[in-house]
Length: 67
Image 1 (cartoon, helix red, strand yellow):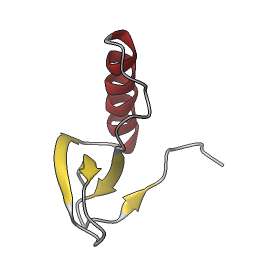
Image 2 (cartoon, helix red, strand yellow; image 1 turned 120 degrees about the vertical axis):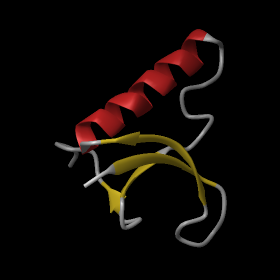
Image 3 (tube, one colour; image 1 turned 90 degrees about the vertical axis):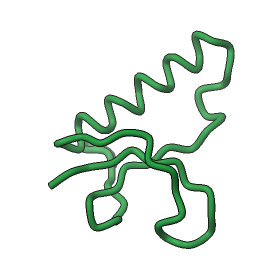
Image 4 (cartoon, helix red, strand yellow; image 1 turned 45 degrees about the vertical axis):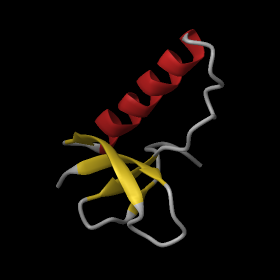
C-alpha cells in the first residue's frame, strides 16, 4: 500500500494536491516533518500550510504513536 502527503484545498474528500508518495506511514510523516523544518528555516511558520497523510484509497492516516 502507498501513502501520500497531500495538501487539502477544498471541502470535499479528495480535493487535494499530491505533495509526495511513500511506502509507509512513517516515511510520509517524516516527509511532513522535513517540510515543516524547511519552512521554519526559511522564516515561515511551521503550521502555515496544512499537510495530511492519506492511503491509496484516500482515507486519512493518523500519525503512528499519536494519541
